Length: 247
Image (cartoon, rainbow, N blue to C red):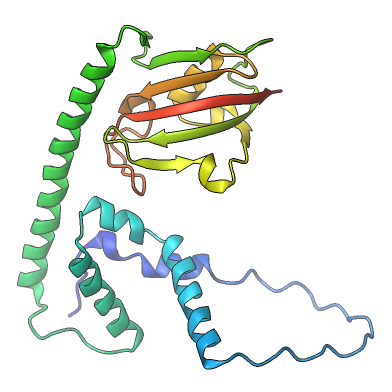
């Protein structure tokens, strides 16, 4: 009898179905046009690169990156995991020792890593916020949001239902950047203010168009105890945000 080694790793069906094509539309007679010129056949190297791209896109859209972060997998462990995926794709079988006893012990290992990581992250974030609170230039609100206004901006400030356009950089307490408009040619992004994490909704109402604010957002105003890709559960998030426009 086959049993899953860990329920969280059963991502393949979800990821594959996410890539399924949409239902075909009713057939419509195509206009008569000149036949398309056949595209140039792919070389063996181009086919290889195409499959690499396809695998990358599927992997990026699946829980795989988050698994590595959540379970703190080493490169060797990632290689072993991918070897299992390869075996499954080729309709092979697992090693004879992959029985229920191994699966139970392996699950204990991963669960232990999650607990250990959670304790470590919590301690790191408590120490980080204590350091932030010691900075006299930082203000703390009743909700626990910490902020520093570097540039107030001018004009009306946004409200929770405003549409705002921003440039930003977000990082963890260890300084690791997890998201930034700088990585996307510094093109600003636009969204409705009450559709983002509560720390942003509260913080951006403190500045006007053209303003710049630094936010230190505790977990309860961000993603709480939910792991978010490269963001560990319970993380304090630090943002520098420029409010480009308000509507």
